[in-house]
Image (cartoon, rainbow, N blue to C red):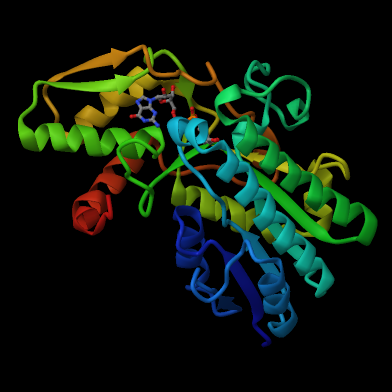
Length: 321
Ligand code: GFB
């Protein structure tokens, strides 16, 4: 049997590495990966040459410049520029060299800041975006529209999945630039080790977030990529081709911090620094379209935090900052 040649862009990142873990068990897949020193995804010519010489059947576009609320707010230029460039380079060159199947990974921040909850796929472009991550969101919306445009004009099969807030092994645990789960995991762990009596959590603790464990995201991505055309199109429309991925369950940042303290074994108090931004008040995904397509998450928050903390303990000495 001829194996399909699958390129995972961003294979060292949290989601890309999870996709690799799952696809590497398959005997019908030949994985193709390139690290940053071998292929700069911001370099249009290099990306085009890569697609010209490799006979790729499928692309998972999991490469992205990502970060939490502070990083998005501090480095808006890099967030919009790098994401737009990677998407344009990969999607256009994939098309130029005949790649028929591609899955683009976006983000729930594509939806308006005050979208009705839970947010359906149809909420896209119906209102103003959250200001702390607008440049990143615009780049991700452009990615969806690139896929839709190549499908409409050239009959490509470029699909998009919009994950809710993700976490898990291989996340970025930087104290300031990371997302809330890795940031708090590190802070609670260090407080436990140092026997501190208090941990400070940014914002008011009242925003609500939905969290999905990265192995579930990888499984959902592969599921959507491998749906037959008929099944996929039964739940999407030509001009609305993205699919939400999440649990459909959310909690406040305060509740998540309490679960984190329990998983880590931190016995002190938790306080809130309301001088730090809260971001979007709530962004709960409507995941009924994905459920209709036959997929549901399996890892709940406490279980996912426990697995992630185990990985953190085994790998914290290799963190660069
Ligand atoms: O994870 P986070 O940065 O992502 O923040 P967003 C979520 C919530 O946790 C916000 C609060 O209300 C933060 O104020 N929070 C509390 C903290 N303590 C901390 C902390 O120590 N670090 C961080 N980072 N947050 C991101 C977007 O927004 O969501 C990205 O900026 C992306 O573009 C991502 O879409 C999924 O959910 O606010």
